[in-house]
Image (cartoon, rainbow, N blue to C red; front, side):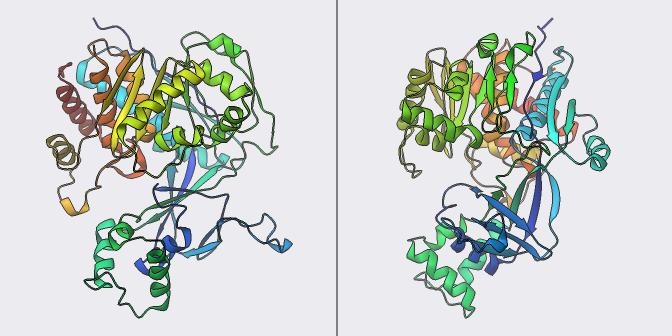
Length: 454
């Protein structure tokens, strides 16, 4: 009989993010890239202070809270994007995806191996209007998550959606062999000229074809509490606390959960933590991180912590040094860093290992595509990089599976599921059929060479 695998998840509102998907035409998309560059030149996520929705589209940038105040926006300029279609509203967000993926991976593992699981106790607080809650729960039938609803303004993400393959074809159709723009559309010509001025090639433009624009006003309740207090002594034994606290949170009794915190650096904490590092003052975020069992972050965040420039051209060795530096700075035992298309770096119990993400042409990727029914190579998502919100829960699950004896096997398990998520819509496993999840788990276990499916 296998041991029970603990299945506990505690996070903090707002775990759920409203996602608005905007379908736009190619000239508008090119104009968006020019208007937002260089703010989005590497990442698929464009973090901006405000998002405003209108009847025909939305605007983003440093827009004054009071549009009638005549204040001049500073920094990133305001840019308007109009939708060809009405936005499609869906679910998403880091903590939401994290919870969904943990629940689905655990369910698939049980179905594949018959391992007994502890009673599901995945808890996800989220902001949602009362009239929308019943339908929201119904959409998650069969996924073992308990939602704790609270009132307030939910976070929002605006996804600008175009076909990567077709956008690349469009760019080729408006340029000559020397990369010059042949379009007569003045908006297109101006946008193209702006990007070329920034030394962006046509090939690079085609890879800037997806934008995830985040609203940065996550009001967690109708009464904004700038000094929200969290007392960690109330959490019972066996609970894993996953940090996703709003800015200004006051932490009490952190020592009560020493080594039971999974610290995942997000935008809420990154700025505060960097300020504590720069001033050499041990503040609440530093204390929370130092009390954690494990920290998950990406390479850009790791660079930012130590005021290092990030251009996406560094070697994998640089990421190794960052992992060592984080361990030394905060005394945290375990560090995992995802790094776009470079290997995932893990410093676990003194062992430092890097494991590559399956390439698009690898046999493992081909098998994943086949199980997902993505048979048209032109429409496949290329080079699933990062690993994002799936790497953390899947790695923690792998650490609980007794058959995984080596760090390499645990990393392979986590990277496999992160690669799957990057190939499906919504960045989570919510809509994959149980049979597909089970087949994917069987493939995953076979690829690690450690566990056989039942």
